[in-house]
Image 1 (cartoon, rainbow, N blue to C red):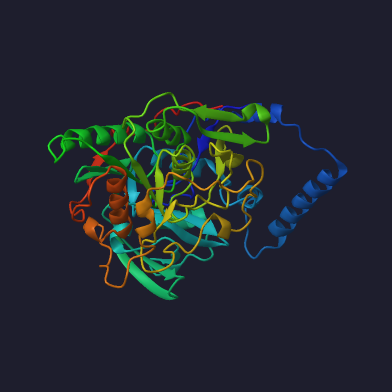
Image 2: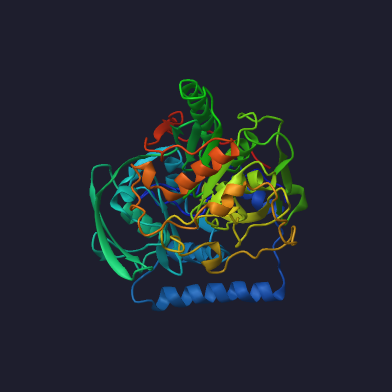
Length: 486
């Protein structure tokens, strides 16, 4: 079966709180009419299939006749479709026409909400990650928190989509979220104000002669914004001691993923040649491999990539490619472990299916599904062993890790000697993390030490200047025509 589709690489349904499809990002075209689908897929008409379809109709009749209040065929069928697709794996889902329209609106680049990526888990709503600089991030909501109440009303009996709709609202309106924090068992309430949440943000800063670039999501135009940030850093470095950049820190922490083409483009900016990533699915004709095109915008500068448990999917493609090519040192914590690709398949005017159609593989041929990418230099964010209490492997009915290279990773021989002296976590005297004070960012400070050692420099005083934001070009009010992937 061949079809044009949108390739998605996010971890979650981005409630932008509603922040839109958030980690769910459209990456390609969506021309897949329902009529073509009906022509190309042959239905199983075996006796067992007929018996089960008859059972489905019988159950619908029983519910319609006996349920405590009248229920429509539309609601029953939508519920069945939710279960049919949503129970396959954590990242597949059915969207009604209204839900699909909401997603298309949200990927236009800005929307009213709080700034959270969320995901359904066993009937509950769990936070994947807050987006930098949003109401949720400023309030202190953390990855792994379970949202239990919206405006002091329980959402336990709602679907993920229904819960997200409760959290959406006009900019300037008030909202109260009650969460349970599993690591402490505490119940906390956060009062916030919805605001326009802008996505596609790149942050950059110059620490001595080291350039720092943070990517928050792999959205449209991310690579061009990153390139602009790098050019700005090069210009700034001409006025710094030494007169040039000596290394780059690429911060992918808490980046939930996004578009496949942007992950490939970012990787291509740092790798001269060789494979970046490949995808393999059920239909061999849809398998594909992407290679670097002979460019490295840094001309070989040392690179350290920062990762944590919130670095997922597209972030893992970039980290995996740079690690396998020995182009960067990965420092931080093991990544989320989402090694699957979702295809967005519109069904005429009836909605869409977001379906897991492939696994992706790093250049060494490994699937990171359920495993994640292990850092070359493990460094925890906080004194806790792991600030991220859950990953892909902890979700229910996850996709299995099969195929690809199953051998043990060959230990790297190019890790700088300073790695042996890098602490695994901050000690008791390290100050509490404050996003506005880079000197409190333990992983960042260790990355600067490693970059300086790789560049043959002594380590200066801790970085203190906050990162500046570089926003991608403002998207149009309506979604752009998506690009085609096959």
